[in-house]
Image 1 (spheres, one colour):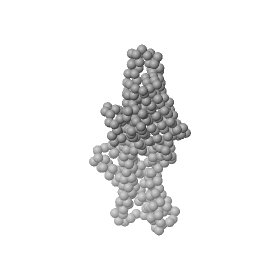
Image 2 (cartoon, one colour; image 1 turned 90 degrees about the horizontal axis):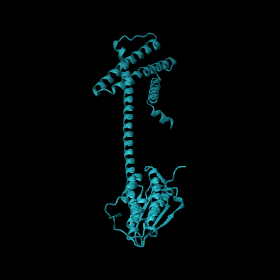
Image 3 (cartoon, rainbow, N blue to C red; image 1 turned 180 degrees about the vertical axis):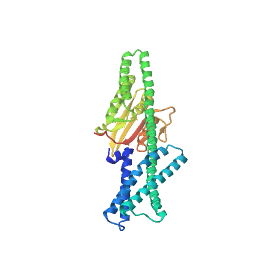
Length: 357
């Protein structure tokens, strides 16, 4: 934390710094303004004495104003005006004494109004001090409200991302448990046991990763291999997976479980529909400052309108787009298109970022 940050984080330190700096500035400006009046050391002493008395007398205003800010507006205004006038009048008396007794050696003005000539100037100065005080307090209050609003927005944003992320777990879990149930009914207990074991490992990875944080793609690939091993228990030789992952992409940060619903979608709508099975190709590479990821299948294809699948009740791909929108705002691309010669291809482009060392 920098020195300036520490200064503004402490109200006590900020008050005493600005309070002292303000009165020091008053003394400097007053001396410069009256430089032609007198350059003797006695005059400099009077200026310093007046600045010090002003510094001392305005300190109680801080505590009066702190109390006044908690009162009804009309009561606050009356309190501030009376307090400013009382301090200004007292400071004017002190300045007169300093000027008459020390600088003029016991001088007394003959005209009665001369006793009040310093009051207006003093009132203006105290008024400026009060204005700066309330200005800083109101600024701090607005900043605090902005921080609270930003914090609330951030918490809501994070909750939205977590909701989107965890929405996938029941979706995937339902499909897998249904498959395990089928294996048990078919008396394929060994296959069911393997599937349960891999499901346990996969869900442990899924639940252990914070949905807000991103993970290295290499770590995500390991989880996808677990998932595909689960699916291979169901499809055996009917499921072929081709991996083409550039080594430079292994450390790239990606949202956890971002590719799994795409692969699940391919298995559900492509591989399971083909009697001879099919193939899923998973690709990742870099292009400039971006990370490009593709998931393509060679299934029967699907109706695609305006870059979206025309299927109803699907949550996986819609979920992915919402997560990318929440995490990257507009700095991403998500497209669904026809694969050649058949099937569906899903492309994702996100910024290429790696974890700090």
